[in-house]
Image (tube, rainbow, N blue to C red; front, side):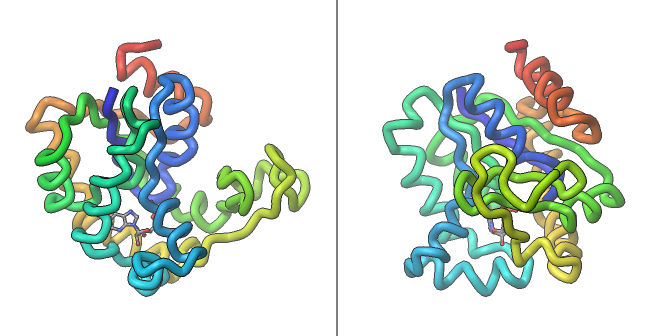
Length: 207
Ligand code: AMP
């Protein structure tokens, strides 16, 4: 099964993608994680991406398209994959359709007012990449693996505003894009994570 998760930053795409990809035994492909890893490693892609990410802007289409095109050829994608954070523009969606066929697109919807609180309180584990909200943490260590938690630079309030603007200007139009193509399923993301997972599975017809 080849899936796309759409939704604004902070909607819970990453958290849901981890759960759903495990349940369906498909690869989880997060372009944000791939770019952050490239920055850590200091690769040419990472050096190019850093300025865009820090400013809350989209990394150029050519760069992310090439990255995804190569990634989905890897062995772990043979059974399918879940794209988390890609496509983010019509140009990316058009390019994607030229090299693979998507089965279903899930839009995880959360109102803007809720997103700011979710994103400013978000902490990520350096080791397992798990994401958590400060309100659920009992210590400074990752509750899953004990690793160090940090706040992403682009989860600071100034950058979050830009990311939400970019979402509304460039990514939200993909909802209609995939609706027109009969691929879209809408899920309410303003619930407990476990309930959202159940709703996504139900939307995919595999509860
Ligand atoms: P995310 O982890 O999905 O929130 O992505 C973090 C940042 O990485 C975004 O704000 C963009 O700067 C960049 N990024 C991730 N995916 C894409 C994409 N498909 N197209 C362009 N930029 C992206």
